[in-house]
Image 1 (cartoon, rainbow, N blue to C red):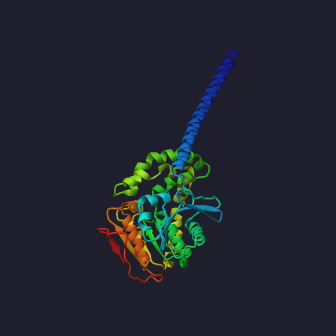
Image 2: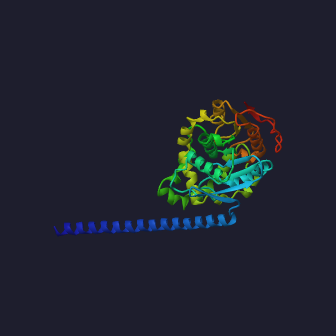
Image 3: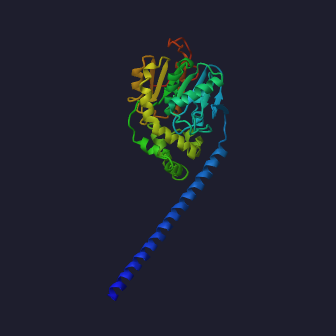
Length: 358
């Protein structure tokens, strides 16, 4: 009996010892993981602050409904408002050359959309395309900008469409570039949306997500520019870490998550668009397939024109900025009833091989 009790005592002691060792091991792993995350957070904070020091605001600010918006403005004449895509900022439009080319004839305003560049994105709103459109409409009223041509690239095209739907009397025409207009499933959406998850997303945006984003950056660029090569100016001048700051990642991941439902809601109203619309896309775009989006929207809008740029992908703004300005010229040549009057495209030579559909 004594021997049995002794064996049971040894067995219990052994289990306690093993449990204590396992707890110490787990504690060490947790401490190690915490140290790694802390190191990542410090590095991300350093790179974010350095990016802002190296790329201070280059434009102006306007406060609208408690939201501070940053924008670039150049040129004089017919106002043109340009809205960039998801994960981007006004600087990207500047780097593309579109801003300089268009400002030769137009008054061009390029906004940092909420959460991007130096514009704020309060958590008090979901900032879907309609909410952003209403914010920009109030900003334009404050700036005394009347009847602008509204240009939207990629996700920004949804905001441009929403502005045309919400305030048709205030919009001269729309130029929609490489847009995602219909609720088609995309494999990249779930992955891009992870950083929008509460708590977990906050942790990731300040630690792992920026580093993973920087590692995946070359692959993402190849996809966005394909079948064209990434432009040399984009490689050299685009401030990558400005786009990897935690706040901007939050905006990008949130918009990725809302893209499909936003397109679903807006697509039910496309038939309401009455102003002239010029649709332009890279014929080889694999990010927002033209046959599923731009061509389909063109078929739905009788007052639209479709331009497909050969050998260009999603970033047609960079590979063929002249074609963008030519599309703006076409939109400017329409009166508010959609009737054309003569115009001269002063900025650009015809783009060889461009396919135009009326």
